[in-house]
Image 1 (cartoon, rainbow, N blue to C red):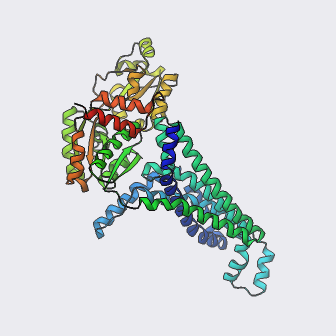
Image 2 (cartoon, rainbow, N blue to C red):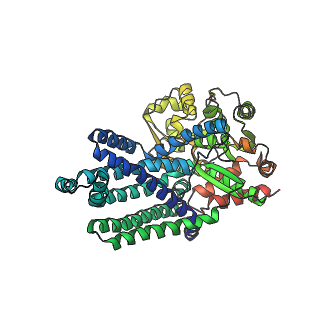
Length: 517
């Protein structure tokens, strides 16, 4: 626990700095958009309803979905920009997060500002007109000062929402306090999860209290409180962002990873090899499957590990299964031709989807294959990872066997295994290189119809790095070098509480094991 806490504190300057920079930028943009809109909406009842309705509609979109939606949109715009003017921009990380959080910050500021301006006593507004004030003078000298406490209450709400939602920017490649939470949940590092939650909560409370000083000062006409609150915000934000100057030098390479333990370990293994070759490396972790490949194809990340079955079905849209070697050969040719992506080669093991059950349950129901499972499915609950039921692989296996489960439930992978052991699921869509299969003595059901494609772990290289000798020479020794037993052991060392190690430590141990003759 002490080691995990020390590791969390070591990462805090970078994670907190990016979190504050993102939150401050989004809140600032939200203010620039919301206040003029609020003034216009307060002046025009005809404009007021559609503006407030649109802001409310945006707020109903789950924040994680809004963040994810901006990535493909920006990626398409970047590709268009590159095609037209020869220069694109990064669609991963800060920009999609900034735009999504800006939209999220608008509603509370807009609604409170409209309420504050329209709530000014009509007698005061008439008095202002009576002394000959212009509309501009009335706005800045009467209406806005009187509405300021209500506007500040909206800004406080927007700040807390924005700081909280910024933790969800991790899956689109933006470093934030959410990195603690997403990685901790997957690796069952509860110290990391609690640390990320606590840091985000303290940051939100501090911002709220400092903005509260500004609100109190505006309400009581106390300039000192306003100055104290604003000074605290500026000093705090500057102190949090200052350490980022040390991270200002661009990395030579960006290594990506999806959101589970094996990916973290393999990303660390590749990064370590590049660092030993003298390169600076940045990790972009917790990426979704579609985001990771699109980011690689667009040159946003330089290398990551994916799986042949995922690429075959999700990227190429293939539903057939010509066999392991044919899939690898087809991927190597087609991804290079279509996207310029280099398949460097298989690491030497598969991490395939594998339906698994507790041995006592499988024996009681006489289930040993997916055909047997289909017979008993109406009595059973299927547990899957969050994305499996929306993937082509599920449609293929369901079409082949005609499953009709009593219930289907989706879990974060760690909790999926917990659900199986606790009886909340009867069968799960496990992963064949996961050490928990052997540790829990799970029964892996055979697939007599070969509906599930092969899932060789392969290193992918982005088109812009296709001729990069240093990158390829550093990573090529990993091709064919990792047996599934070694990968299972590394995964298990991270995924279980007993003797828990970090992904970086597991990667070092795996690298040392591979180096031994």
